[in-house]
Structures are given as structure tokens and as C-alpha cells.
Image 1 (tube, rainbow, N blue to C red):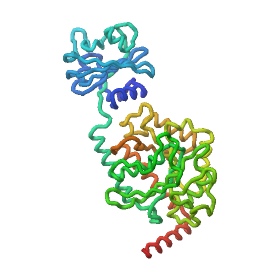
Image 2 (image 1 turned 180 degrees about the vertical axis):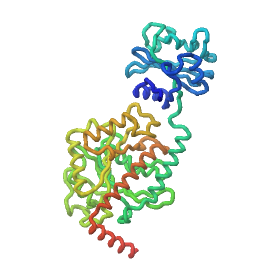
Image 3 (image 1 turned 180 degrees about the horizontal axis):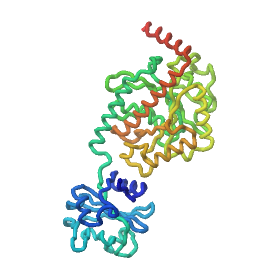
Length: 442
């Protein structure tokens, strides 16, 4: 039977954050293994950095040793976890750490003013240590359990190599992608969502990975009031061979309670009546014949997949009016037969989320709760909610972000294929004849 820890998810995440993003592997548990210093040393020596966790009635005390049990430690950090609070102090030993005392069965950290007696289940600390950790003025603390964990980097060389390979595989799949039955040359993906949710940033992030460096073609407003007042259709050239990639990202004006995109305009966008650089006017909805309105759009002009973009930190704060607009926009898509997904941005700025969590982000509890919120409040299927991580302040590409964003893009291309496959036979036959005619002229 697997040995499990008493650390809660919240306590583990707080410790991971304090230690710069580590993962913990349980090596020793006093109530399961022999409650002796010999057994602790046998299991925990030569394991590298470790944390020793002491569970008392009302708090958790943690000792992090940077070199583990068998080396001279450069430093040791003590933590006091009480509820959701965490206090710490750093102690630098001046001589090799003594870890064993056969006469008293003691795992001994005298140089740290911190001693653990496994047999008697007691911790002894100096008054100086107690004061730094704001513990009650009692030098001896009884405990119920002691656990020792090996500390490893969440992003080791093996994992980063696997991520790089996955990134290259996704890049190759998207570069060689061809829309269903070649009905169109490029899939058109509409990005729609509240102002400041990250629509333009997502385009910039996708362009960055294919160009090989971070770019900022689409303007992003730092005060989150939204910059996109035009309808923009962005093709991307592959930095590898200069070829145009098989998709177009369409950036629209953001949804807002007052001055954002008019929901009535969405129908005309989906049907392909709106050209690139169309200037939106929230006071004057689109009408047939206005400006450079496209009267007879072809399938290539239409939207083949839509992505609702939401900031993970703002889901709970969407107004009743905004929720109503989003649901109405979704009804327009259903009416037009357009497949839609959700992109959840800014998860990497959420509390307790570290870079290493992005590798397996869908299992991360705060993100799972956000996905549940989107499902419950807005009615989107959980399977349709994708997590992305935009480039905002970085200047170097990050394979973790790239994998998330490319995975989402690939799902959108597959969703667009579903849209094309579901078109009426008569409509696809017309498009194929038109496409053949164009190809012959060229």
C-alpha cells in the first residue's frame, strides 16, 4: 500500500513557492517506518536536499536542508505553518550537521538550535528559534508525526527535454495541417471575450512561437481597457521556411457592458461579411451595405471556429450583463453552426501557481476550480475549456507556454474540421467548384 503524506495540498503549494518551485517525494514516515534515527538515516541519506515535516496539534514545523542529511549544509530554513500562514527563518550552520546520537536515539541538529527525538516524539528548539518562528514560549513541543521528503526541481532536464520534443511535434502537426477536404486554404479562428482578457496577447504568443522570438504585433493595453477597436485578421508566416501557416486568427473588439463589441455584430463576423480593419462602432451596429461590407462572402471568409477568451482571475467578477452577452454570443454561434472553445488565460499569475505547475496544469486544484467556475457560471462544457499562457512581459520563448498554446491551437483546428465536415453537401459542392476554378486560373 502506498504511503501518503499528511501535508495538505495548500501546505505543499505554499512550501513549493517558498522553496522556488520544488516537488516533494516522501522518503520516511515515522508512523509507518521504524521510528528510529537509524531507519531515518538509512532511508534519507544520499537523497540530496530534503524537508523534514513535524506535525503537532495546531501547527506544522518544517526544516529544509539544502544538502540533505549526509553533507555539510550551506543553509537550513525552518518554516512554521499555522493555518494558511507561513513564517520562516534561515539558519546557516558553521560546522557539519550531526544527525545521529545512538545513546538518546536522537536525530540531532544542534547547530540549528533544533532537535527531534523520534522515540519520544518531541522537538526541542532554542528560545531564539522559537522567537523567530513566533511559536509559543515553550522549548519542547510534542508531535504526532514526522515525515521526510526529497526535494527535486519541478522542471528537471528530463522533463524539459520531453517538453521540447512535444513542442516540436505540435509545431510539425500545425505546419503540415490541411483543412478538411481542402475546402479552404486557411482556417479562420475568431477570438472573442471581455476587454482585457488576453485575445491580442494570445495572437502575439502564437506568432512568437512560429517566428522563433517574442513579438508584439497586436497592441495590448497595459491598463486592460482594450486596444482592439478594429476587426483584425492576422495571417502568420512561419519563421522556419517563410510559408503562410494554415490558419488566420481574427481579433475582435472586446465585449463590455457599455462600449464594447455590439453582440448584433457577431452574426456578420461569423458569416464573413466583415473585412480586415473594419472599424467597430458600439453606437452603430453593422448593417448590410455599410462601409466595405462584403455582400457575398465565400466559405474562406467565414469563421470556422471561435474561441471565447477569459482571464482566469476575473471569472468570478463577471457582471450579470457580461454573462448575458457571452451567452447570447454563444447562441449566435450555435445558430451559425460554428464550433467554439474557451481559452483560459493568466493562470500563471494565480496565487500558488508556479512555472512547474504549467506542465500538468489541468490537475492543478486552483485551475480545476476556475474551470468549474466557467462551466457553472457560463455553461461551457468542461471538455471545451483550454488553458493557455500568454507572453506578457517575457522576451525569451518558454517551451512550457508554447506547448500549452500550441495544444490549444491544434484543438481549434480540429474543431474547425468538425465545422467544415458538418456543412450541407450542397454548400460544400459549391465551394469545391469555386476553389477548383480559382486553382485553374492560377
